[in-house]
Amino acid sequence: MAVSNAFPPTTVGAAPAPETLLQVFWRRYRRNHMALVGLVLVLAFVGIAVFAPLIAPYHYNAQNLSKTWQPPSREHPFGTDDLGRDQLSRIIYAVRTAAIVGIGTSLLSLLIGATIGSIAGMRGGTTDNVLMRLVDIFNSFPSILLAVILATTMGQSVFTIVIALAITSWAGYARLVRGQVLALKNLEYVHAARTLGASERHLISRYVLPNILGPIAVALSFGIPYAMTAEAGLSVIGVGIRPPEPSWGNLISLGLSKMRGFPHLAIWPTALFSVTLLAFTWFGDGLQEIFNAKGER
Image (cartoon, rainbow, N blue to C red):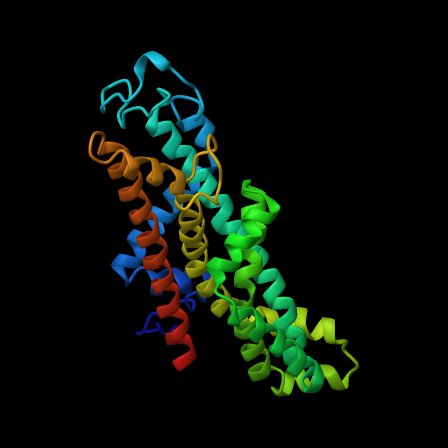
């Protein structure tokens, strides 16, 4: 006689797939609502910068002398300037200029600083002392004054402003990377790789740099708005990017000089520039919160 099984077989559900690094990052990041707002605004900033020629209704230097100093209207939502140029178009192109200056300066500063900091941290001894004294020398100069000298010497194009600002801001990245390298180079897996004959370049690129991407990302998120602010300051005092190339600095400078009669020329670029700086600050705070929490665990 066949015996029936009173208990039907049960199937064990498969274990959930482990989260990817990106999924973990997003789960932690979205808890901070202000950081999410910052991320959305930063993405919008990047999108405007990339597609500025397609978004802007006019070329930034298209002049119409019959429509100078126009107030905001349907044709020119942000008004026009002294040459009849559309202010909205110039602000959109100023976003692109700010992106080039901010991102270009930060990446070039990081390249210089990370190279010097990683060499100093890995080699130590005399090399470390010499390179860190070089960092101290650069830190002893007022960065804005040095940037003014370099900008007036090399010229006032976007490229030269990026070079000038990078020369004045790489030292902070060097100290950051050196500190991280000193903390990592004595770990067991780095010692094991060195024992097996790995070169210094291989140790830095394979074991050190991938493990300090978090602090570097946070530093970049704050370095980009710093570079944009520095460029705006240089343009306001007349040694930054020269018109007709639009930048936050020269737009704000023109607006402030005409504040009494044409306040809209100052209000829009100042407000949007402030929002841009806040966006990067909120974005950076979100990154910092994630990596600090990871470090505490």
